[in-house]
Length: 369
Image (cartoon, rainbow, N blue to C red; front, side, top):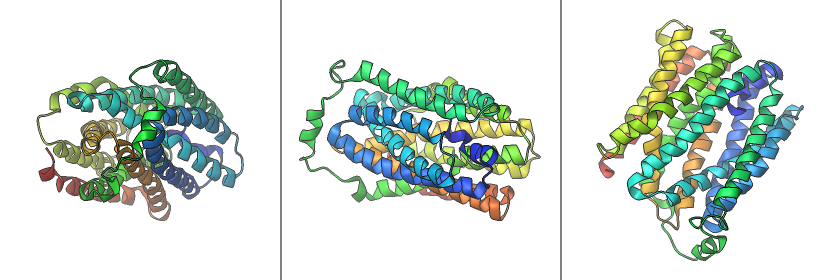
């Protein structure tokens, strides 16, 4: 609930400028970068279970703390630390999905994981919009308590002592001595990561500049904004698994990533081509959701395909860093473009970046099935 409404919280409840709000989002993105790197390395050393449990529990506490911060500098600092600890979860969780799944159903396994995320996103977006219209501070409490609840659920179901499929910590300690191929020396993977940063920079406009555009330019209520965000999660929950099942193994996965990237860019450019309305917001969300469903599941398949059991955390960490870097660059650049020009310019820039990213992904197609 917190992240999608963070810019609205800072600009409306705290009365900060959109540039100041963008700086907070950028600092949270910087924390995510640090969390991705640290989480990936610690996952290979301590195990994905330990990192997930720690990240969920402490992150939940910090969500509540962030909602109590009053000074701008304290919001910046707390946001950075929260993002660092919270995003240690992502490489550990991705490694866990790869561990519990099999090669033949791995893309679908990641889609199931995304399904759970988007069901939460649909519910959180809808309720978050209603709650934000009444009291922004409740968002932080709910987000924090659900994180802590998830930690307790993880401990009760997937701890090594209660689930034989979860490796004990000692197994990971033995692996650190094994020499493995480094993700940082994998040239094709670095290109993929750079293109993911560009794609993510586009995608994160959904949570930074787009809600402000809806509010300031199209004069939508927080409740409607929340419902539009919930539509994205609901569509993914209903259709992504079926789409992935139909498309998996039919074409080169880079093809789907490329098309998805272009569609995501189109979902923003459409605001410059048609008059703003409630229906346009719905159409834009639909196009963006289709792009997301085509691109993201197969992005996960791509990075996992280049790993083994001993370096998977490192690859997952770098993939997390790509998204975290996008969380820095996307909101910061987007809000700065809006503050110094206008939203129309931003949507054209986003469209151009989507073309560059699509071409970059396309260059990897001949090297991957």
